[in-house]
Image (cartoon, rainbow, N blue to C red; front, side):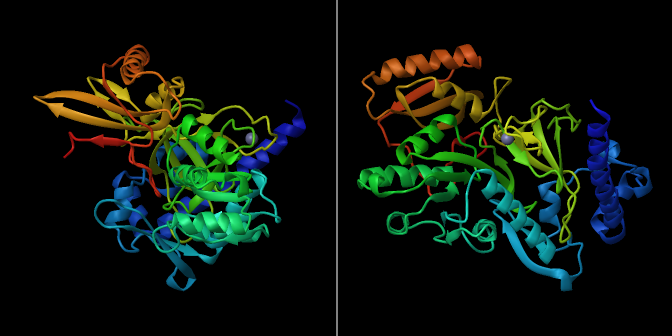
Length: 424
Ligand code: ZN
């Protein structure tokens, strides 16, 4: 490495270190939550000399945020808070996130970076189908779209009929939504014979994990390129990482965050390239900065620099959530493992559902798949092939049910893939 490059790298990391140490001090001074957490483990901010000491800091869990409802973890003074959002907690109290004006601006800036990275320009017309309001982040997408000067079409979710009409009449070029809704819109457009009238060129889809098969079906029907976008309300919302045009991973904004990967069971940091739970520390957030927030998302940091030329580092696509992991007969199974196998079987569609059952103390998995539109193979033959593949590649024996095309539910929001009947 030349001396010049080395000097540059040093500068970048020292700026990050400064932000990081400053934030630890701020939290110690201004957050009773973190001061308590630090004192529980006998930690003084002076012990944190730089990023190398990150691992000493305590984790922040989603439960911490819930237990400090409504705004006990807010750090900036009330007069600086300009907005709150809420994460879609499925159980118990919601989680509220306060934003300062600078937080809102930074989020819009990150979202604009996402748009530019995937090739959205000020000539594009962007249909925004995620929800607006307290629970969701349609407004985050809108801010990014407006920042780059494109036209936003804030349809929000639902009303597929109207969505398709807008898409045709306004000649929408970019679609934003969940991948489930992208698929539903594509299939409905095909059914109504509208595909020729649709001018889409880009799909920015996120908020749930989606397999290659689902992705290629949306891409083929609409004739578009699709990009995975990542984010979570606890941090800002969507837009903290986005699929690269080379589709080799998701670039994340390391001037705003520290990403680390840990072993979800031991909490130990894992080296770059190893798969585990993503933990995020915010560097610039003011309303509610977070130290080592456990996202429960499974991914890895890609150690190489991207071939697209961007210097922002990358994570891999999210392959599951620590909560989604099914432990069956001692084997850890992620939905992504099943999807990987489904991809190799042309006779079935992109949709599937996993049911986990327990009878007489014995666990079993039933995998429901759909036969593809044009497949002529018998349900029996497809089921046999799938059972064998799963036995060979994952090492478990499961039941397979092959249903007719489109018999599994399509969703406007997130598709529920796993139904674990052992938990009820
Ligand atoms: Zn790239």
